[in-house]
Length: 251
Image (cartoon, rainbow, N blue to C red; front, side, top):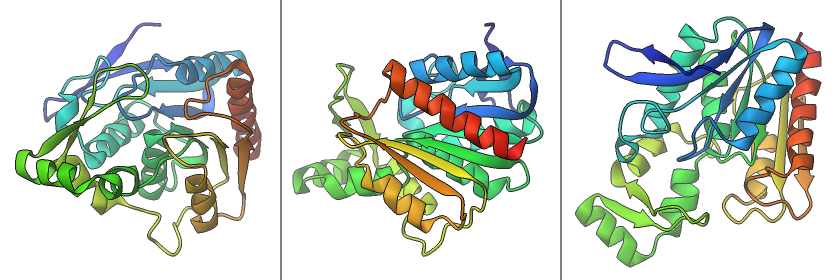
């Protein structure tokens, strides 16, 4: 699959891969510091090819092959990347699939493009994670370092280099928090999947999200002993089946 680039007026270049097919299309929003070549993105692409469904995967700025620096990114900036993909590449109606941070981005897309986003599938969705899972969990010493230096480096659980977490990321993220709302004004069908042994994003996040969504058609599937990545073959198959379910509802 040839990688293409969406060049924008502000100088950003967003890397993406497009599989042509019928509508509604499927757009995949990846996670924090993940690129578009992960197992979930590729499994979804194969599924959509088999169905003849249009599919788009992309890299946020500062991720993968896109321009920019990861440490300069914010939730609002990555939301804008996804909106630019919707507006310029994945035109027309879409089902949006979001993994981890991408589960937050997909919700922001649904709120911003209500006519275009017809259904959602969230995998270990992490809305508000910058506030609830980072800022609220920092020690007094880490907060002091953050306020002094503007950045701290947090270890990765996956053998990768430590993540730079900036004060800008946390402060800007507060403007996009959703779980504090009484009702999240999204009325489309939503399917959520979450592992009960997710050490990064507790499964209760998806339960709270389910309760907050305005939609009457929201289902949460818990995966016994499932971790955060949910990339085992049976888990990827479950994800594709949930996507098939919502596609059948909106086609």
